[in-house]
Image 1 (spheres, rainbow, N blue to C red):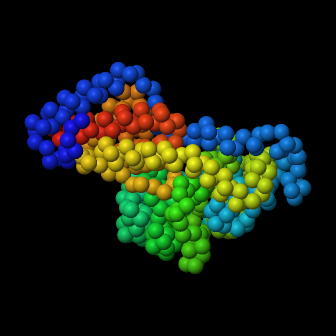
Image 2 (tube, rainbow, N blue to C red):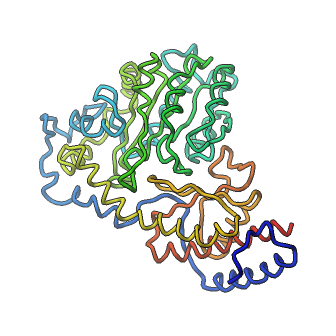
Amino acid sequence: MHAEKNYTQMGREELVKLKLDLEKQYNDIKAKGLKLDMSRGKPETAQLELSMGMLREGVCDEVLSPSGVDCRNYGGLDGLPEAKELFAPILGVSTEEIIIGGNASLQLMYDTVSRAMILGFPESDKAWGKYEKIRFLCPAPGYDRHFGICQALGIEMITVENKSDGPDMDKIEELVSSDDTIKGIWCVPKYSNPDGITYSDEVVKRFANLNPLAKDFKIFWDNAYAIHDLYEDADVLLNLLDEAKKTGKQNMVIMFSSTSKVTFAGGGLSFIASSKENIEFFKKQMSMQTIGYDKLNQLRHIKFFNGKYENIISHMKKHAEIIRPKFEKVLEVLDREIAPYCIGSWVKPKGGYFISFNSLEGCAKRIGELCKQAGVVLTPSGATFPYGKDPKDRNIRIAPTYPPVPELEKALEVFVLSVKLASVEKLLG
């Protein structure tokens, strides 16, 4: 074990010696032939087991909803009334401001943007797709699948820096007020993917006060981790729709969430929430697309949680018990193995699914390569930026939830060793 010393202050001779030592350690661990995956933020099996009661006999032997709807039949485009009542509090909206969708909020997001490309919004002069060019603001590091929607639909992306309290609002205000080709912005406002930050009250209020030049500008507010707290002293996010009502700009806000990491990742429910005007508009458009989503699945969720929001919150505490030790393990290892050498920085989130690691500039791709060669798959470097291009090549998204703790420990051993080796290589030039 080498002495704890800031790598950036070491002389060349010390770094060369350190590199030889790290290469030996790396080759030893590479020889173990590990096959570990930390590439996506998936719930582990024990988390999925928490919701098995939804599938057990007796939970859904009735096919009528509490209000008498036969869930086997057509109808109910916007969801069962009891499902809307149960899940509306996740986004802090009324039952008239929410639609219950299928198993993926990503589908609702894609559909909302793609319909805008074809049909526009009520405020639009024409469909977005009929403009020569439209653009979205993309706070980064951010969620790769948001960026993927833009790329798939030919929407140009503008990167905006994410700060410790949310995106750079000075830049956002400047851009949206001066450029009518900017039609939207992607946001993960609570325990953001990947940074784990929660937008401050000031940032939320500034969003509600935006004065975009494009009259059909929309804020795509993906509150995926609204109830995914790890600790009792959880972050609290101000309600954007409430704030936007105060400024008369509620039609600018479109919120999303789901139970993908609450019940079953592949068999949950998704939600889109907005002003009553927008919801009516969406329902008209969706009526050409579907007669209604899976009401039997909605009924399963209603019965499993006994129709009570507080039961959802109790359920989420069980999730936290499973994944909190994993987050703490990652942070403990980073504090011990990386912090003393000043070769990386990270946020300590109070919830969500990720830890965002920033290496020395120009090292992220190399760290990913070293990890892969030693049998550990990470989210591809650059994925947290539009077009997959991290301008500083330093951000790495760590997804600790899926591997069991013993596997996570092995993966972290490879990760910190790769960070050290890549950092020394960089410093040696």
